Image 1 (cartoon, rainbow, N blue to C red):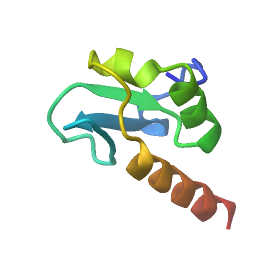
Image 2: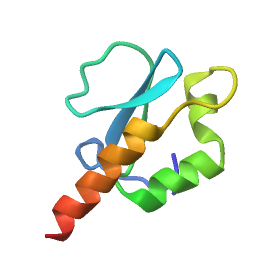
Image 3: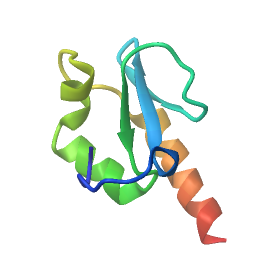
Length: 81
């Protein structure tokens, strides 16, 4: 969604919008419409900048991505070490 590159489903992070907040769905079991991004800061920033998340979830207005950013930053730091 962010960088528009194709990848295997296992390599992507599923995101679900719940009450106007984007949350990571690590196991892929949360209900609702999902969108997929690479679990990197660059890909997430591209998706936010392009306003792809509200379009993917077919929702009005901007969504809160704070929890999602925190998760991706933590994943980036864990993979760097």
